[in-house]
Length: 431
Ligand code: CTP
Image: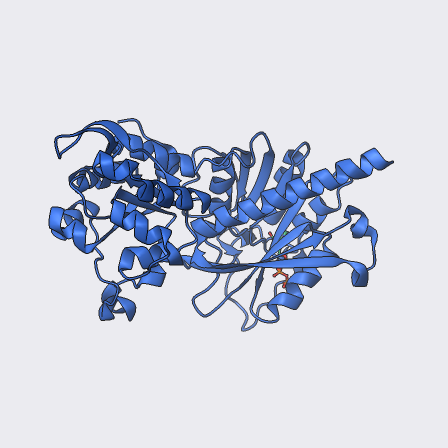
C-alpha cells in the first residue's frame, strides 16, 4: 500500500464505539501502523461487545484504554496514561466507528466515559467516521447532532452508502480503512504556508578545542526538526540547517549539516535571501575557542585555560537585514522566562520569540515541552519605536510532545506572518 509520509510518527488516538463496523477498526489499526503512525486505542463499553480489547492490544502493540476511572493510569504508575495525558498525547483523535449514541453524547458535551472526556479535553483535531443503520443516520436528531459537531469544527468523514449489516441499503456504512487513512493524513497537510520559503536552524553547534575535543550543549535538535517537518506539512519549501544530531531529517525538507556556529551562519546567510520566514531553533554555542590547537592538547599542567571568543549571533544578523524575513527566535531560560524572552524579542528586533523553561524535565533531551510565545503586535513601524512604546502580545502553548507543539507553533507563526504582510501592504497603499 502507498505510504502517506505525513502519518509517519503521528500519534493517533483511535476511539472505537459500539457498532458492527468495529471489526473494520482492527484492520484500520494495522494499516495506520504500516504508515508509521503510533496508535493508542480507546474503546467504549459498547465497542467491547463487538470486538475485544485484546485484539486491539495485539494490533496496536499498546495497552487498550477502556476506563475513565482507572486509578493506576490516572496516577501515572506502571506506564499508564490518564485521560488528560492521552488527550495531550494525541495529534489527532479518530473515532471509527462513531455510533449514533456517541455522536449524540459528544454533541451535548457529555463526559461520562473515557472517550467522551478525552474529546472534551483534547486540543487535537477530532475526526468521526459515523457508522449506523441508514434510518438512524437520516433521523433528524442525528442530523442535528452532526450539524452541531461540524459547527464545532469536528470533521465528519462518510458515511458511505451501500448494503448494511442489518440487511438494509442506504447511507450509514463506515468508510473503508484505506479511505480513513487518506482522511487522517489530510489533517496534517494544512497548506497554511503554501509557496513560502522557510529556513530553520536546529541542534547544537560543535566548537573545536583541538582535533579530538569540542565544546557543545545538550540540544537534541528535536524541536527544530519538528518545526521543519510541521512547516513542510503546511506546504512550505523548507531548508533545515542543522548541527550534529542523532535524528533523521524529515524527507520533505532540504537538509544541510554543519558543525560550527560560523559554518551555520555562512549557510544561513547564503540561503536566507528570498526566504519568507526564519526560525532559529538551534542552540548555537555563544563562544568558540579563539585558537583551535592543531595537535591534541596534552595534560601537562594542573590548570588549563581556554580563551573563548564570541560567535556571530545568527538570529540577530538575520533580523537586522534590510529585507529581513519574518524572524522567529527561541529562548531557553532557567529563570525569569517572561522578562528574558521579552527583552530578547526587543533587543534582537525579532518578530516573534518562543520561550521555554529548561530544567525539571522540560527543555533539552526530553519529549515534552511548553512554549510561551511573544510577538510584536500592531503597527509594523514599531521596530523603530522606543522599547517602552512597543506592544508585545503573548500566548501559551501548553505542555505537549514537541511534534505537536511544533505544529501549533507553525499555526501561530503563519497567522502573524500574514498579519504582518497585510499590515505592510496597507502601509504601502497609504503612502
Ligand atoms: N542564536 C543564534 N546565534 C547565536 C546564538 C543564538 O542564532 N550565536 C539564536 C538561537 O537559535 C535562539 C536564540 O538565538 O533562537 C537564543 O538567543 P540567545 O540570546 O543566544 O539565548 P541564550 O543563548 O539563551 O542567551 P543568554 O545566554 O544571553 O541567555
